[in-house]
Length: 40
Image 1 (cartoon, rainbow, N blue to C red):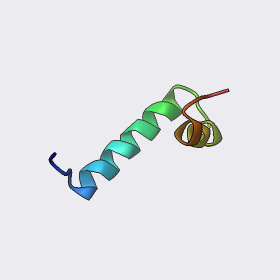
Image 2 (cartoon, one colour):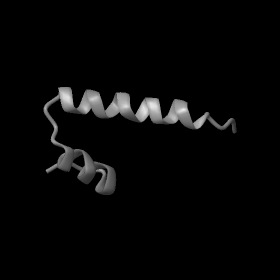
Image 3 (cartoon, rainbow, N blue to C red):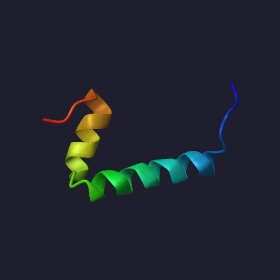
Image 4 (cartoon, helix red, strand yellow):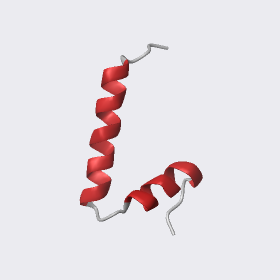
């Protein structure tokens, strides 16, 4: 398995978080999803 550079991973996470915000999700909803895998 190939390891991605840390900067690439960070950039991907930032992009995903920005997309989630554009969909109207709050920071708390994003955190809950990352912890539990669900959104209420």
